Amino acid sequence: MFYYFFKNIVLIPLLRWVFRPKVEGMEHLPTSGAAIIAGNHLSFSDHFMMPVMVKRRITFLAKMEYFTGTGLKGRLTAAFFRGIGGIPVDRSGKEAAQAAVDTALGVLERGELLGIYPEGTRSHDGRLYKGKVGVAAMALKSGAPVIPCAMIGTFEAQPTGRRLPRLVPITIRFGEPLDFSRYAGMEDQRAVLRAVTDEIMYAILKLSRQEYVDTYATEARAALRLAPPPAGHDVAAPARPTGRSAAA
Image (cartoon, rainbow, N blue to C red; front, side, top):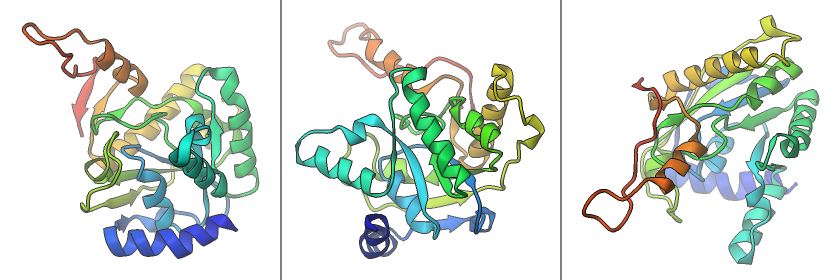
């Protein structure tokens, strides 16, 4: 009840009238049945922009911190994610996240839409980072198609650390469904999971036209924190993450 009230009464008028996001490829979304929507993650605004433009309800995997915040902001954030049926993901380890994966598979078994950000966290610099294999495991175990999605402009609107978004053009682009039925029964093979995940990330890359970095976003952030200050400076300057990168 809260989800439909908040989406239709609050979010749709606010986001459609103020930000006027443009949507491309809506025909690729199924009108019924299970599907995984896998997108890039550039901004906290992603949680609002894309679901508002899709008629069907999308249940998202969201980091545990969104559900455990303190203070007024933390309680409001937690209330929102609980109200929309968000699934908290404990990122402290593989075993800790298994319960969230099982719940996500339950969403797909009910024939619903599941939203996931394969990068695992927001991009701190607007580039696309290596995807984690959880999305592949869910796709193979459920048999659901994967719909790649690109959020374009949300990084410029609200990068990490910015509280209020800027009014900039936003585009939400959906790609053709990806069918991985050829890998049925192979969800326990690490090489298969990696190949499926990379195919999903490449589809997102083609839609978003971001620069790609072949390392995990969490590792790239850690590298920034650990980067030594340049000679003659007292504060650390941002260091570009290591790994293969290429412009789309």
